[in-house]
View (cartoon, rainbow, N blue to C red):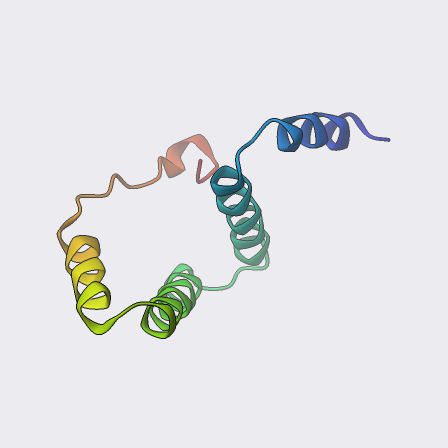
Amino acid sequence: MTKNFRKNFYKAQHMNDEDKVYHDLLDHVLHLLEHKLPVTMVAASLMAIAQRLYRTHLKEEDYHRIMKVAYETNVEPYDIKKGTLH
């Protein structure tokens, strides 16, 4: 068992479900970016998936409300000068 595997396994055991999902998706995104896929393509795919999930599972009014919140939310960019996205 590698040191990183043990560290990540321990970390995963102590995360809530939301953090696990976020970090699993972020790990996959980083993997895609390591393969030199365009950031805009990866980001657009994530947004399309999110919108379709919301559209499928929310009432029309709730869908529009969450899209408005997403549009109006000020999001800090990743600090890519550190060499990672997180």
